[in-house]
Length: 46
Image 1 (cartoon, rainbow, N blue to C red):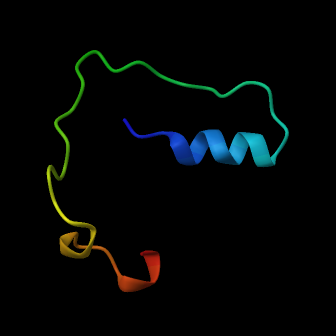
Image 2 (image 1 turned 60 degrees about the horizontal axis):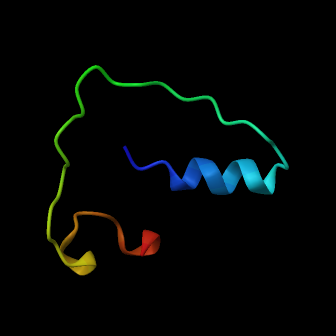
């Protein structure tokens, strides 16, 4: 799972540890090989 936002947040908060969980099976990705403008997210996120 993508967790870089969690890493950045921990750095900004000066934390030294990040709680995590391990999935028994890695879920399939929601989107693969898509251009950023083709993703179904609101424009203000881009």
